[in-house]
Image (cartoon, rainbow over all chains, first blue to last red; front, side, top):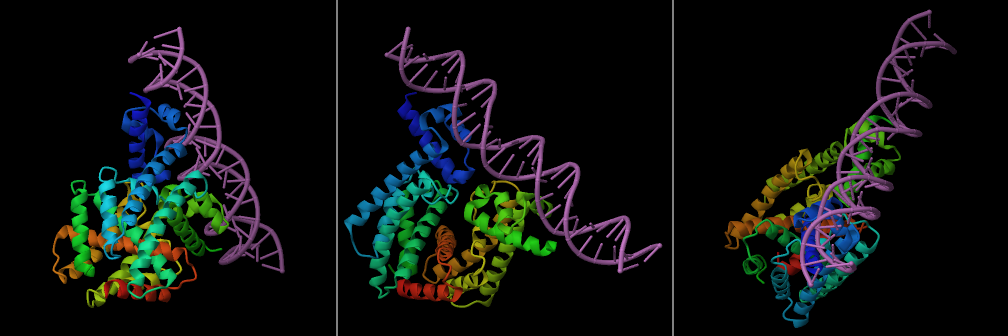
Length: 191
Length: 191
DNA sequence: ATACGGTAACTTACCCTTGGGTCACTTTAC
DNA sequence: GTAAAGTGACCCAAGGGTAAGTTACCGTAT
């Protein structure tokens, strides 16, 4: 099997395993085993556990920030943005549901390349969340910066929860998730 | 120092370290070091890493379920319950903010005593969340069981996010957090 | 009062498994 | 025949876990 293809397989397997067990809990031999390959090949291609994690992280982070950036750039009513962003995330990650977790893994070492890269992706996403929260809160007459930050952080937590729920229900596709979220938000908040 | 007091110190340190780094990422020697003690004493008192984690988990889980149970038992309007529960959680864990994370640590081994105990506490809390979500959604004319489960899970994720935000702002006390949440929910949802 | 035995708190130094990482080698395809 | 894909067997550090000993205190008997 050509290297490029094998690397792609390993990144997918790594994303699932890192997403499931966290950086600290994931095992390189287990990731290799999933693909039907042995550890040295994994090291030949990615150099180290950090190298593999970074490859997984960059793929996930890049797709995520691109998708959200496109949605935010399109604009719209503040009330509509959360659902639009959710729809983009669900569609992008329908077959890659663990990817989101890599950006928010608490078990990565607190210093080093991984922490820096993950913090950078989080920072970019947080900037979008803060932008959306600002629009939403100011439209309601709330302007406390700390309130905005809290809402932005809770928003990322909501996405986290929805993805966790979704991971446990493989039969629910992206459109069904989006419809569910639309129904719930309409019912609970009148959005 | 008497054993009881030392154990309490170690449980507090363990809760912070497990909460920060996760079960897999936390180190026993680091937990001992925080208290100014060495590893064997930790093992003499708690037997194993699992033993210490269980001690931390039971303290956190017990306080949490008790507090939420008392709040839910008091009853009230469905719209009011989320804020009441948040207030109870903030008050109970003002000086113990990492405790909540122990119940939701994804890095604990998937089988064994810890997983079972954590799942049990989560189950009890989820039951309250599902109860609250049912009341809230039915009051809005939504009855899909999957919607209710999703809302319940998102609710726990919201609590998670708020606590993470709070951990990063040690100067904000429980009352300020409660007031902030009241203000935000009032502004965003008209609750 | 003091010597003494026992117990609880605590440490140093070690063992051993797990898992990240590497080397030398074999197979396969062009 | 060579370059790339791939492997078995190994090394080593980190960290969970333990054995044996030391200190300090407390009750008790002389």
